[in-house]
Amino acid sequence: MHAYIARIDAKSFEVVKDDEVESVSFEELADELPEDAPRYVVLSYRHTHADGHVSYPLAFIYYKPETAATRSLMLYASTLQLFAREGGLATPYTLTHAEKLTPEWLEDNLNKFAS
Image (cartoon, rainbow, N blue to C red; front, side):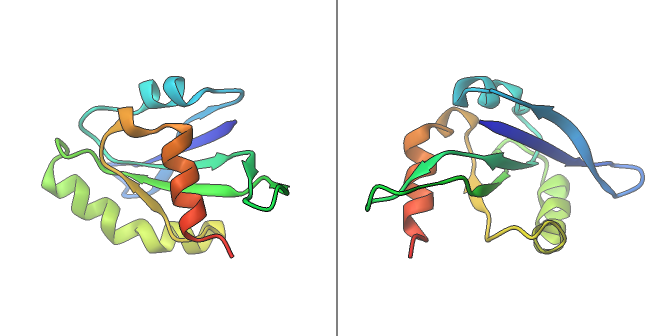
């Protein structure tokens, strides 16, 4: 799995790369996420559909921990759709606890929108 993690620069209000990791596990990715600050995460993930075919979707995750400052949450929420549109990404999956980032959590979210 390959992950791109973005944050909003507090001074310029621009979305910037926070980290990019290749061949990362879900546990390692969860460890990369801060406990008290939102992030946008884009994953390239191997997804096996119910009919058996395999795809590699870009999964867009809006990580918004409950311990984040309200100002940060508002800033990220206001930029969310623009980031998705500019990146050609689908609707984000919201994650509030990094430890819930598991293959099962992602599969459940991917299957909600499977056609």
